[in-house]
Length: 119
Ligand SMILES: NC(=O)c1ccc[n+]([C@@H]2O[C@H](COP(=O)([O-])OP(=O)(O)OC[C@H]3O[C@@H](n4cnc5c(N)ncnc54)[C@H](O)[C@@H]3O)[C@@H](O)[C@H]2O)c1
Image 1 (cartoon, rainbow, N blue to C red):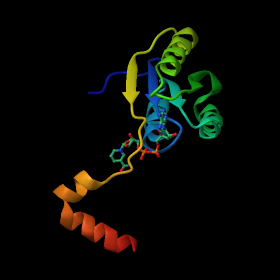
Image 2: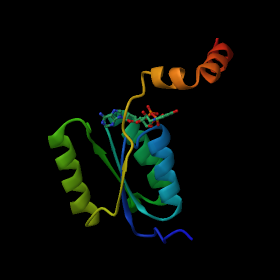
Image 3: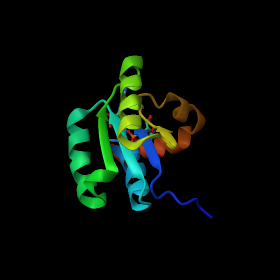
Image 4: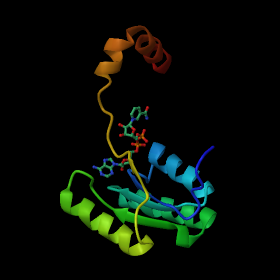
């Protein structure tokens, strides 16, 4: 049995794209309030517009933030607290995956198959 997420506040780093955005959509469907913090301001703007249209403008807050810069993080957290009165759930998703070496070492066959499919 999943908890009722209606009215909860979820703060998602790297929420403007990809997995973070998809997590935000899932929380939006569960009627949670969503804070998307991301370094990519253009993507944030586009995602804010899409989420506001789907879930309602009062359910979404977007904050430009580089999660590797402490001041940015403090500023974003403070803003989210001011806007929604707190944070219930943190999804620490922001990141860049630019090196598949570990996966290649552990799954050489799978990686080989994937690479050949992509070429
Ligand atoms: N996609 C995969 O197969 C996969 C596999 C394993 C792990 N991951 C991890 O999952 C996370 C999300 O992956 P994704 O595929 O959705 O990536 P994505 O590139 O689609 O989205 C990542 C988001 O994070 C943002 N971002 C990057 N650096 C940031 C920073 N310093 N501060 C704030 N925002 C930042 C980007 O602007 C982007 O919106 C990443 O941490 C990635 O390393 C992804």
